[in-house]
Image 1 (cartoon, rainbow, N blue to C red):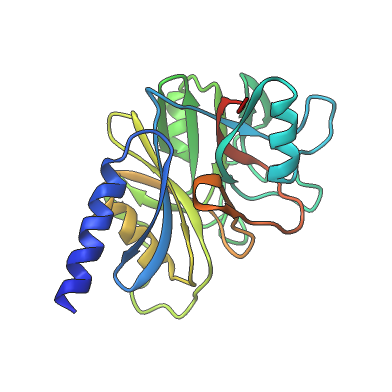
Image 2: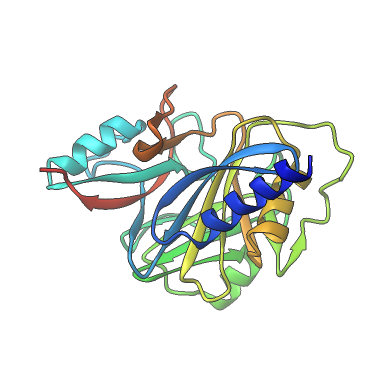
Length: 247
């Protein structure tokens, strides 16, 4: 058991230290995850919803093909927050400086409305996760932004409604950002986990002061370096890195 824990610790350490969008599998407290560490000073990470003509991208392959037509391609990608049946974002959404949906500050049904929820704010060279009311008050400039919920970690504390002995277990994905905003950790669980287990990974292992939940059962990942391309029904917002297309 001690050797297994040591091996997991070594793997975790290498994953955390890895620059750019380095995607790795890891184990933490008996659960399996895939982590993609993005160095915002080196990588171009963006949000994607539609092709500019109103057609929802919906699928990693469709988005990748659209980028390749412009000489680019996806480095990695995952679903980026909750959406309505028509794939429209449930909450605040900004893409390339254009606001598609306003901030939703009030409580509501489901995980999105389990306040506090939050906003992922992306800019060239930096990323931050803000609690929604703080975001609404400070009004930071964000090239891209997406609201989801609940928050997983708020200023170093777990969401107050997460129970350690909860029996609510799902595949889950989310994002945490370092205090300096230079690194973002995008994580998906590979087995069902509780909110408490998932948020503890961000706070205690990745040391992110703030982290945001994206979604549950529909969680999917595109990571070519791991030969992983999760399929399924069309998604709403997608977050991913953009790299030059292969020759």
